[in-house]
Amino acid sequence: MRNIFIICRKELKSYFASPIAYLLMAIFAVIFGFFFYSATAIFVVRGMESQMMGRGFPMDVNEWVIRPLLMNASVVGLFLIPMITMRLYAEEKRSGTIELLLTSPVRDVEVIVGKWLAALLLYACVLGISAINIAVLFFYGQPDWKPILVGYLGLLLQGGCLLAIGTFISTLTKNQIIAGGATFAVCLLLWVLDWVTAYETAAWGKVISYLSVVTHFEPFAKGVLDTKDLIFYVSMIFFGLFLTARSMESLRWRA
Image (cartoon, rainbow, N blue to C red; front, side, top):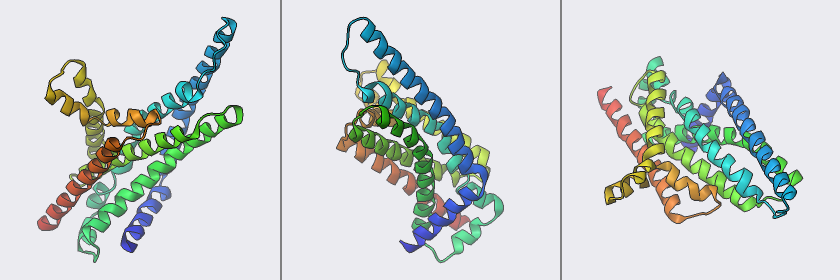
């Protein structure tokens, strides 16, 4: 465990020693801030309209504001995750330090988990920017905080899943642009797989839809914690890191 945390700290420092971390947080803050303003503005306008029409029923902040924001945050993460993972191994291969990494007295699994954990922590820092906007809602309303925590857990699990896949793809090339582009393509494919159910009702269509990361995030966005969704994300994280380990073994043999 000690080696994992050392590698994690090293990778995290490299993110914040460069403009990468600050650029990602700035991009996310601007985009999420716009989503937050739009969602709250729509909520206020709809509330005023319902009062003017004599429908003074209470509007749910979680349903009208927080749930759409969490769904939008997951979409933004789809674009940011390739930027986080593209340098993990591609930069090591480009700079020639991959040989030092392969011959160091550290097990492959420690390197892999350490790098993935650093990427996940950076992603958590990026998501933390949105918590500032969500906190504003507690000053002016009384949203239910439990669905919010469940939603953020879903964002972290979904991010961890896609980060594990991006980590594997980064081991396949020394070009960061190729690694980032391939990661985005795979993540986008996993995002749209649930579209199959719109035109296919056979068993294979349901299986493909089940592999979509969106299918398993929607319950989290609603504040529902389902065991099958937890198992899916944890399994995908393990699968992505397993492929990374096999790729590292291949690099070691070729070296």
